[in-house]
Length: 84
Image (tube, rainbow, N blue to C red; front, side, top):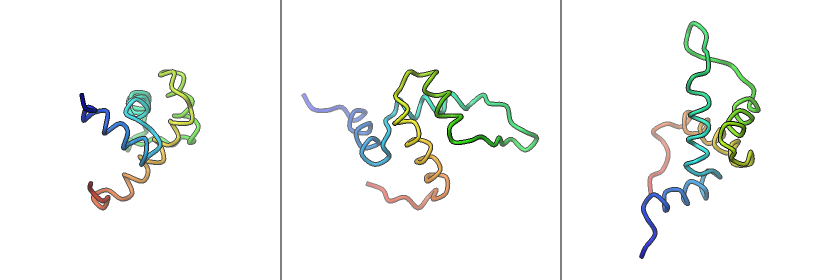
């Protein structure tokens, strides 16, 4: 039996961004309810979401910074990433 499409996507994320779907989910689940200021933003250090995501999810911290880097890149280059 072949590899599922979800497993393939997870592997591609790991290869390209250094994280998998679990790491993405952990970071998003951690920061979604953070309080924000009047304009809907919050300023944190890079370590804040990594530490909280690792504590919440139990995932290794070496994957979580990769997700933060990928998120920054994705936001800065939205619409310009090459498609496979």
